[in-house]
Image 1: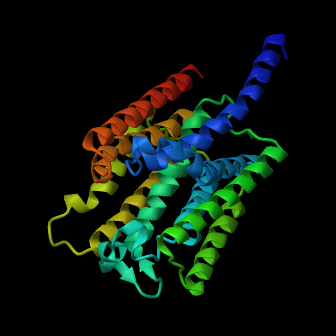
Image 2: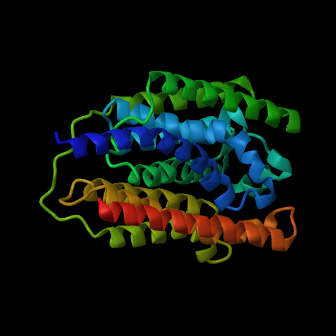
Length: 334
């Protein structure tokens, strides 16, 4: 190895802690602020959200890469995270008055008594956190790393991340209980923990052997990004696009179809010739840009002046576009 290669490798290694820090803060910024759930005036609260969002995303990324596994493991662990956050931590899955909103009424038509929650609500929870809170930030930050499959943290850093995640979850769980004094029945909590455990076990049961490659060429990253943007847009607009009076279970069924189509497409594309990090970024970029326009609609419901809400949309949306452009430029250079 030449001196230049040694120096380059050393610099890449020194930069990796910054990748971890970037992911730590990007996850809550995408998951809450870009979506329009938090106004720009609440930006300091990112320090309270990052220990759960950011440490969760970082923990998933590090455990996956350390065990030599890939995106299927990330997806399953992200789904487990989704149920942890909205289940045992803040209990939105079961609280009919979560955050002062009549969740019971909003999701009443798809409520299943045996589950104690709504199927549509579970779909929304899985979609938002699996895709945007976890997978999108990981894919974007990994683009800046030349060796995206290598760990960013040592053992001590991984242990600290795990402790921060547990502490962040505990803090938000206590805060939610103090705000609403709601506690789900033990049977609901035990059921959620069981499902979470199954997802985690399945995630690590997946083999590390690469899937058999196909002879077909992968689509261009631009085509993949457009497909991701369109698919994510269909998810958020699925109820709007359906005629008035459509049964509430129709969008639920459409969600399964849409999710199934994309799982099959991504599974096939990822085994095709030429598939690589640029395609991962394209998928993440299409999803990220969906949150950019969606944030403008969500921010209208924030308890802040319209001008303040609009300012937040412009700042966070513009920041997302700049970050995506920088990541794309980095991917092109590599």
